[in-house]
View: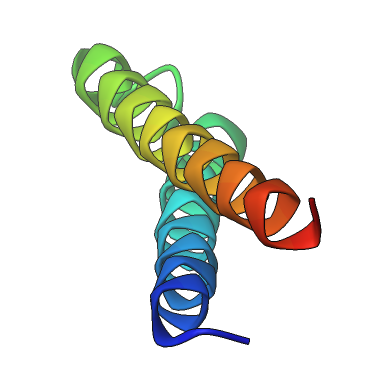
Length: 71
């Protein structure tokens, strides 16, 4: 595996972990603190969306690089 591919894989793992952390934060808000903490909902939801989108973009770059190497 090339260094570039390894770096992309590492980025995918990191962004996936960050997205999962944000998802847990959102889950905890919903399960434990609503409705009192409703003011936090939009911010945490937006952060979760951005983290998931960042993972998706990194994953797509990794998959494209893998496909290029396999071709």
